[in-house]
Structure formats: structure tokens, C-alpha cells
Image (cartoon, rainbow, N blue to C red; front, side, top):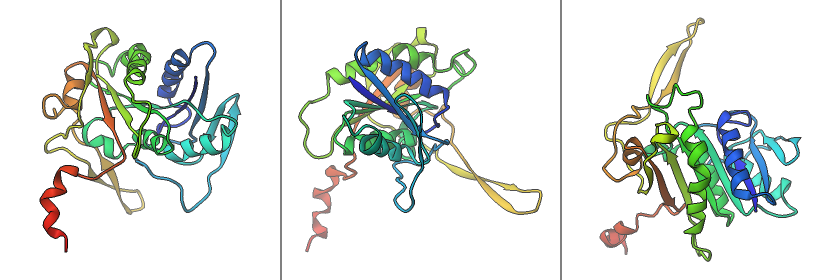
Length: 261
């Protein structure tokens, strides 16, 4: 199996090394792991692509590339430039430092890379490690992802439909904020929403008197509805959320039929 890995935390992020180990285990002794990741951190860019300007790409080693672009750019660069001899069989994105559950999903470059891979017709999984008081001070905060990641990927691949039409499935995986030994299992869960929680701004004045704004995240300990992604993560489970790039609210189509003329 040929696996492409990428992320949004950048080519030097520790989570990418964790993902490389996961991918190496899944690929097997006869497989290959290719890396194409952003040269610099690209957290929060979502599914952004560098449509209006070119990006530099550098080969750093055997099957290792860094691109000065977004995670989605990196997927495109790998598929259409670095790996033109044979495309990847699977794209893995992550392991993100911090969760991409609930509303975080909509901003995530980690998710954006998996979405682009799916749009390119490839199986894709985004993986993120929730941070919390039970794991942030561990010697390896990615311990849960490192220990359980390969098994989760294999389980997903075993249950992914081979023949898909329209927008292809991709998967959002979040590992709970606990030590590896405390992971309770895996739960397929829908995307949730943290009530009363969202991004905001925090002002800052520079020494020169200029006003700047930092984007500030919300409280990540707020639970989503029981059974949804962040809730099962906070209960100690790995969440697996099947997704598609189709943003249509299909349940609302009939209730809005009166708009037609």
C-alpha cells in the first residue's frame, strides 16, 4: 500500500512523526509512506487552496516533500507532481495537535486535506489528538493516537464502501484526551456542537501603539450532545465521523420547496 501523509501543523510537527509511524504500520513491510506537508504551520486554514499564487515545493528526503501552501495544496502537490508515477492508495492527515471535533471541524486544515483527497477520488482519514488535563503533561501527549491509530485506520478501511459515486466519504477521527491505557474503545459518532462556545477575538496593542487582534478559541471542555464526537471523546472514546464534502441540508429541501417558482 502507498500512503500519503500530510498535516496542518507543519513538516516539523511532532504529530506528523506519530502519523508516519501509524502509516508505516498500516502500509506493511512492502508498502511506502510518502510525506507532503506544509513548510510552515497552516492551522485553521480549512479547505483553502492557493488559487491565486504559486507555491514552492522542496524535496527534503526520499519520499518527503515540503510545500509552501495549505494542507489541501499539499495533497494536490503530491498527487499531481511528486507521486505522478503512481497515486497513493490512502491519504492520512494529522495527527493534529488538539481536537477537530464539533465546530473545530469547519476550520481545520487537517480536515481540509482529507476533504481534498476525497474530492480527488482517494480514501482519506483525518486524525487528531484531543488535549486535556489527563494527557497534556504526559511525556508523549499523542500516546493515545500512537497506540490506537493503526487499529482505527484498519477498522475504517475494512468498513469503507469500495464503489462510491458523487462526493466520496472521508473520515474525521479524534483520539480522547487520556493516556493510551485509558482509551475505552471506538464510537462512530456524528459531529456535535459545543453550546455557547466559539471563536472570538482578543485585542493587543503593540509597543508602537498599533492595535492587533488575536483569534481566541473557545472552551474545549464543553460537552456536545451525548453520543456526538466531542462528548464521546471526553468520555474516553475514539470518535469516528464519516463525512462528505456535500454541504446540502437534504432534510431542509422539502420544507423549502415553496421558494420555487
